[in-house]
Amino acid sequence: MKLISVVLSGGAGTRLWPTSRQAYPKPFISLGGCPLLQQAVERGQACGADETMIVTNQDYLFLTREVINSLQDPPKTSYLLEPKGRNTAPAIALAALACSQAHGADAVMIVLPADHLIPDSEAFVTNALEAARHALLGQLVVFGISPTAPETGFGYIEVAQIERTPQKALRFVEKPDAATAAQYLSTGRYYWNSGMFCFTAGTILQAFKDHSPEVLAAAEQVLASAQAQQGVTRFDSKAFAHQPDISIDYAIMERASNVTLVPAKFGWSDVGAWPAVALAHTADASGNTFEADVVNVDTTGTHVQVDSYIPKVVATVGVHDLIIVDTPDALLVAHKSQAQKVKAVVDQLKERKHDSTHLPTTVHRPWGTYATLKEESGYKVKRITVKPGESLSLQYHHQRAEHWVVVQGIAIVQIGEVEHRTEVGQHHYIPLKETHRLTNIGKNELVLIEVQCGAYLGEDDIVRLADMYGRA
Image 1: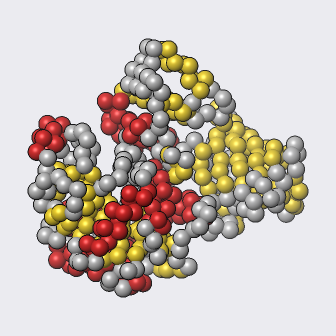
Image 2: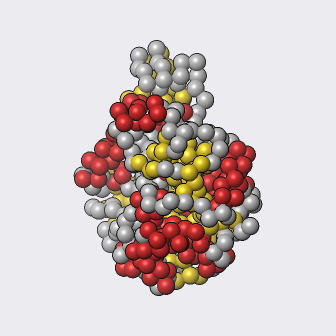
Image 3: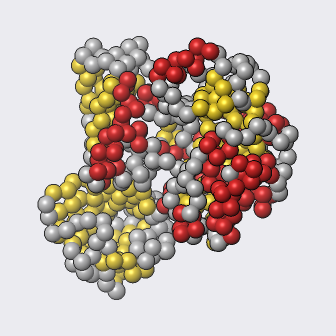
């Protein structure tokens, strides 16, 4: 059996704001010691996958590769890079076409979202191999989660009766209201829809042909005009935009008659909101989960998470069942029962065109990271890190000058045509409109403090003349 792990890595994770941002979404958030994307990839490896195929946005390629390269035993990996999000049906159709071309119609695809938390890997592998057996018999397999509460944030799948063995899926239903969810639970006939699937490439392509031929036709056109190089497939943005924006549930699962539900025998969370993050931590005697130095007085059931540039003490007094998430540029305080409404906060911030919905406080780039430590009228202070052997683009700015101070590592600072070897404690001034570049020539991470001075300090005031990452 040829097994391909297809990891769907997208979505902004708006309900996990302010930690999850558009430029650094939920799959890259660490939970349980490593990024959720890494956990999904390792899940496929544990099943014995011959290859990992990651479908993600083109802007996340370098972040995704960092996760893959950090693994002790990186899998053979291919990348399908979307110019923009287009929902799960087009993503799966493209993956199935690519999988069929590379491995044949009988290859088994196990489709895994990159933002799930499944602590029991062994139980998952057992279920996944059970699903693969049904997939080889021509079934479209979905993993069902036994519901523990009348959740309104999940889709539901109706079966004849909840059992521990695979059975025919009778009906898929969308996210219900609270009363309907409670009714579903009382019948004992509904599972949560996990969004994880298993089928052969040939079976799912036939399902698209039978039930959503327009999705398949659009995907075929997109793949025909794609450019592939060294395992990375890029799609034409105009062709890609013509694909229907539709989920795999609507396009296929609600219409097909050959859908088998495999009941999950493992713990599962889609980490869809902050209470789910809290549940992934070990609580103290009062039900609190603290990822910070917290002084608590008369506090119960509260989750505190702090991301600060300097050590920060948080004190909670007389509060109960709250979510408190503090980042350098945003603070969230919410009651656990209202956590789903965090998305409404993000929607309002987007209307105001606020940066806190897009860029994280530490911005990741192919060469390293930068974080804004202080910004006021006329100046901005940044902390810049550069990985060994990496280099920023050769660039200049129209509206700002810069001062650079190396505080860790060894750099080559190019100013104009002159290169300066620069060590800890040494600094350089880069005048307005002067070309410059920063390169890490040491074996360890380079850390630099940058002070920008000027009337305008926006990130778009960069003119790149040369760039090793193809951005010039």
